[in-house]
Length: 158
Image 1: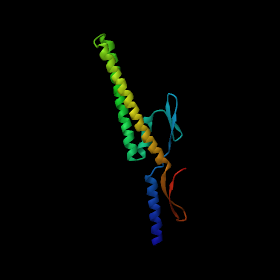
Image 2: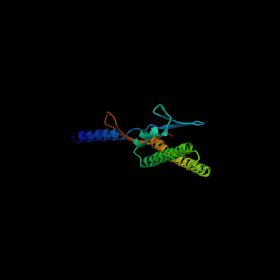
Image 3: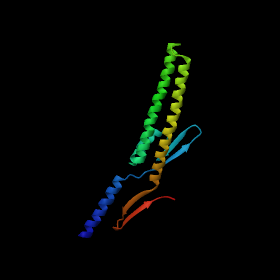
């Protein structure tokens, strides 16, 4: 009776562990001359924001923090690009209402800030992607065979 309940406990434990832990699929980074593409689960992804679901599904605090920093800074970069467009459009409409010195200094300042924020945000994304791929290569597992043997192991490809 005790053996049967022990086997049931192990089966239930392994079932719960396998149901809670999702196997992480590595994300391959393909760097082109002017573009960057990612391969995830045999799908080619063009935009890094499309990787939000697999990265946050890892439930790793470091990945979550880095990816959310990347996302926030990308949003700030988009706002700055919108501000520069609005400035250019208002200059076009007002025809001389804004001085050339202010226009070029504001546009240059926005461009420099945008390049800096874009560089820093890509660094955060690269950290999140690197950590995710490390976790996807090293995974633990518990296995119960049909004969009742229990195996615990760590898989890590060399």
